[in-house]
Length: 82
Image (cartoon, rainbow, N blue to C red):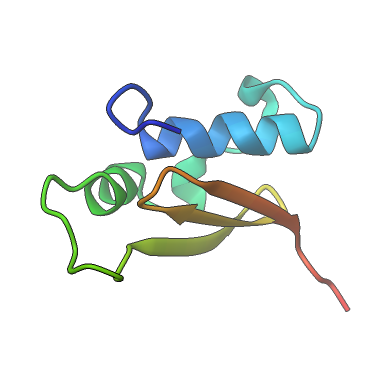
């Protein structure tokens, strides 16, 4: 994703909805897993980290492990229940 056009919190909901083949409005609310405003501020900060360092945030949302990277990547994996 390009964070200048899509907020990280919106990208998470869209990506998870696609991964579970559901409409985004059918998912639980994101703030039950992570504060959307804090996620947006942290991942989409205007300051750049030192070279080689990137911001990465991981959490569980809609029974999926979600990783959001400052680079624009949103990665979704099933939660391992075993």
